[in-house]
Length: 211
Image: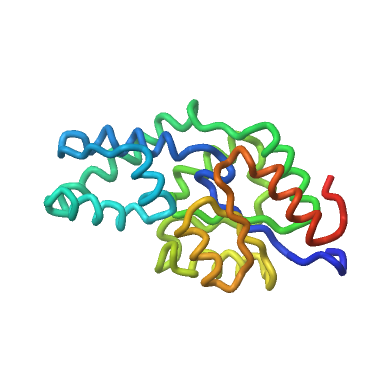
């Protein structure tokens, strides 16, 4: 790491940052919960559900529908299986994101930090051929408290032995998690802007053009 480099690691959320997988999560949830009378529009999902742990999201749904939590939570395995069966073909990395990750892996320690289960996201990364670019992954319930608690990002920094990482997030819960851990956060609107925004951020903070 050069002396003028501000960050010693980069910690990436997965859904909505590395890949545009949130629409698929949304469609899977709508499908499994439709029989319970859930009519969830995309804007509400994007505002209230992205970055929130699945269990907490189901608590919200149960309260809004006036249904027992256990009845809705029982659909969780079906949703996970539905997502896994579809993400093989429906979730893809943008080419510029693949180039970015390969470039960054030569200069920084990288980690994926997601509230999604490892079995949902690691196969996508492996299939894209960039699993070896990430030195650590913290997924799902691998920590005691999920986002917006700081635990996931603190654990990732610990695994990388990083003291000054940059968190890259697209959700409010994720941003709160990174800031609660004491780290700087680059907030994105969606996965499309990752490469441009992160290259600009790292160039600005280091004074060196990121190629």
